[in-house]
Each structure stands twice: as structure tokens, then as C-alpha cells.
Length: 115
Image (tube, rainbow, N blue to C red):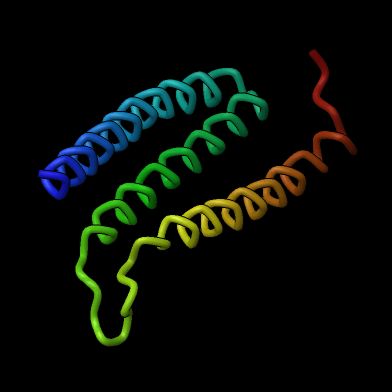
């Protein structure tokens, strides 16, 4: 009975993560459209931040699915701690996005567009 509860909880988490990713994708499409229409770097940066949120949800979903695998000789404790690696991957992506945004903003600081 306890194993069944764990499986049901995992399926609930997987469905929730899939919903979060789908809703964020819809919001990103809207943000990119508005950012393009108004040439808004702030809106572009928020859209790309939301892309990282979708990537984080997908990584978490993948880790949640792998977490259910049984231990093997190579991984005697299974994949239970894979979520930590997923969180680290997300953090590295966010740092990369931050550098990209800084490099994108520099030309605007040097030569700002008039209102």
C-alpha cells in the first residue's frame, strides 16, 4: 500500500510539472510577441527567464521519472538524488542566461534609444 501511495504521488508531481511547463510555454509565446512588437529588452529578458523555468520544469519532470527506476549494480542507491543534479543544471543555465542578458544590455547602455 505504501509503494502504491508513492507511485501515485510521483504521478501527481509529474502531471503538475507538465501543466506548469505547458502554461509557461503559452505565456512565453505571448511575451515574445509583445517584446518583438515594442522592442522591449526587459520583456525579452523575462521571456528568456521563463524559458529557463520551462527547462527547469522539464528537467524536474525527467528526474522525477528516472527516480522511479530500481537500483542497479552501477547505481546501488538508485536515482533518488538525481533531482539535486537537475537543480544544479538549472542553476548553471540561469548563470549563462545572466551573462547573455548582460552582454545584450551593454549596447543599450552605450547608445540608448530615445523615447
